[in-house]
Image (cartoon, rainbow over all chains, first blue to last red; front, side):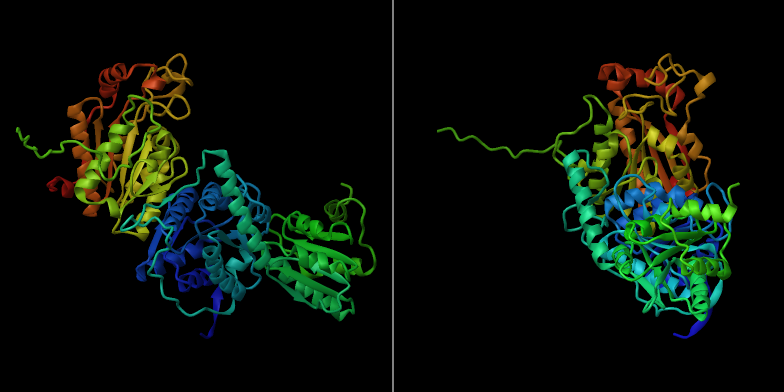
Length: 370
Length: 260
């Protein structure tokens, strides 16, 4: 396959189709809509299922139904739409059926705006729906990575009978850059043994999320937890840049990580020994890898397009051994490399602090005492 | 020596193959059992047991899948028609049914059922209307009659404050995508036979891909109504049927030609 100039939302849609997607259910919402539109013309021409649902609630429950047949199925939305889907996500997780979700994040809370943000980190990584469950969350920083992680999301969802989320901000969904699509995989013709497909020549299959007997529910919870431990052990993904001799470490995911890389390059040109760790799997989080960096890093800087959501996970990993600083932009504003470079220079000048919370220190720098 | 002649037995009544042999959790006198039975009989008669996927809802019938011996999935409250859409679109040659109460379908799930019908989704909805929320202990439902006492309308449903009951069959019958929408009642043998015939027609509509089908079944809830089963059956006939007349609300031209 040759490299083509591709728009993020469309590239993800086509990647899913080539990964053998059998059914797509969605609802229009900016900045994700091109993904739905791509599916609207591609899925029917391939003889696969496409429905524009009446709402995100409808869409996620159509996904739930299709997932119960063992089909490769997905939906996509953006932040407020994802909030509506939380009910379905909890049920899908509890029923242990595989499904893929793409969240093209925008500014919030509430209706917010349609500009790029990373404010769904907590919603996706730390739950959102009710009950004890985890989703696999993958965060691309380029369109090529968005394509590759979309394909991976289907494989992981099926391997672990789990929800896999591709989490990106609106800028990545909207922008174009050269990338290579994967070859077309054939659509699977068989159904998993657990699927509800009609009880022909076998015992009936019942897929449910209700365990009225508390010990049975606890058993289900334990099963989910053990599976999550397996995912934590096997599916942590991240990328390191300039880390060989780094004494300062920037941590950022997705577009914020990409902007931070520009800043790290500039800082290197100034002779500052700084590197970037870009988590790709936000869930499971590269906790152990960040903890290990405390051996040689003098200080950390977390950069996000939110008010410091991943920051808390980095702080847990660092566990007070090194100072952690934070820099964020919110409300759909993207940081410029210069802003992050300024923060890296502060680290290099020994200004990283243990005092108070890094978010408070950042707010103080950003807006002063007013 | 007298030799007794063994007369071959003729079975006139037995458990349908599509029903599981077990005790039910439904209250004594509840018509869920009747509705389950006629659906199971029709599925047997049409030979659909191995090709049917049920979508259970939330309410007393949340455990419908314990009683039907075929594949089931369990939907969140009100979302059964959306979930059924997902199943049907991936497996268009299977029969997909939902089994929903009035709280589930006509309140929290009204959006899902309206749009499934509007899309002409080729699924069958069995809608059990017993004029209250049974599982949570008899609260006011969208189908609760004016003046009817429930635990959340203790002085009787006051239409000034709580509005009027929704006639779901009449409402859905306005949609082009709906092929077959009828209301039946389960209060006496004659009406049960008519209900069974409607179940048969609805599943035939789906089998032939003619569009959305729904059979509303007026049902009793003796426990929460605070009546004996007999009193409840009488109350249904006297109070519910005048507000919810039994009848065919939409029979599309292609369905009218069906011979069942």
